[in-house]
Image (cartoon, rainbow, N blue to C red):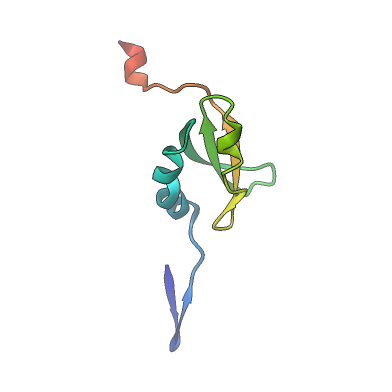
Length: 88
């Protein structure tokens, strides 16, 4: 995102939604990752939450701790299925 400022343009920081949209597909293609979401840490700051279907230490070490200024938190979610599937 670019913000015009007089005769200069200043790059603006990405929103967390933009960061999620930009990296979600790439993250979901990594082994064990089943979700990418947005949440808040204990300080109330927005963070990216990467959900894993189980223990995947090889994937976790490849994940950045921070992505475009936002903390990345890893959580074990287990296997996910669509609610529609559960209702059948």
